[in-house]
Image (cartoon, rainbow, N blue to C red):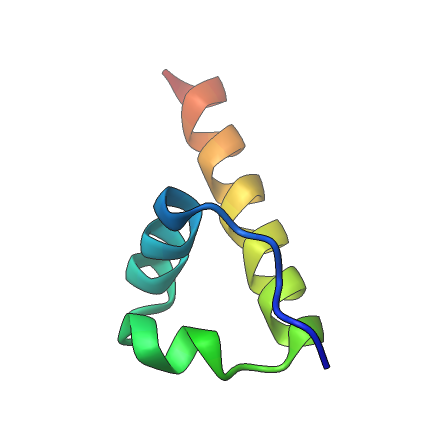
Length: 51
């Protein structure tokens, strides 16, 4: 399995959102990363709409 092509900034934000160390993020399965990334984007867009 190949790595996800995340930028360093995206990886840090995703690790903070999931409350896991960055090292654990690197070893997570791709389908979980994509699901959590979608959840993070959805929550951020709903926060922006509320403002």
